[in-house]
Length: 348
Ligand code: SF4
Image (cartoon, rainbow, N blue to C red):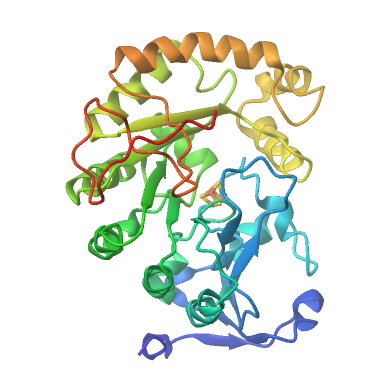
């Protein structure tokens, strides 16, 4: 029974005024295994989130079993989503987690509706479904089971090595519905990785997860995202990143430069000022025009990285209309996927 391991937990009366307004809050919990963190367990009213129609994302639906993320990446673009219920987008995002304990049950009901069109569903596009809390709550097996039962394709993007726990189930799922898996691994300098992604598994452990995904018969893309200007955009770092991704068995790579939307920018700049103060003026100048690095920088980065991608025998990941994630590589070095690999049209 899922709850039996929680006897040591300390139940907290919700002291957060915003959370107290939640009619579906069951309890707030702290536990010695997760020092400094609080889990706010809620009964979700819905599991499927519709992506706004103006979005350029290649999928229309997402599922987020958790809000907030203990991986605590300083650059996380989901931080502003925590600004509701009086939670802040800094430490609260990392430590005050909303857990939708009934997400799989609700999802099952939603997928049974005659109106459900079996569009691809993306997991891991807002917060990480395999963050540490998943070791405690084990929500993903139920979600995957519900998606397969509902004939619904899905994609998973994660930094969590906990994905390995569910690999056999995911490989099985891929025999019934289209599935795509991607590991997010952007930093190949251990000191920098621990500083900017303090709650994540190491780069080495994530690369080993890529290998495990491949050994399970699935394709696995590596997301080199975000590339940090002046920190991880050197030729040496990019070359090392691609070399290790290739050696781990990545079937493609996807990259983009740092995106600093309001709510993230302040948190990131604070970190930069503490850790790399000499770079503050350069970042201030580079991001003076908005959340994206300027076009000139992005073009410069593409000119630098794309020959390296080719030199390492990798492919740049393309969007899969079948899963909303990354398409299987066409030809090349990939092993057979668990589902037949179809040649799929490129969206961009
Ligand atoms: S793993 Fe993803 S969702 Fe979690 S903090 Fe890092 S960037 Fe955000």
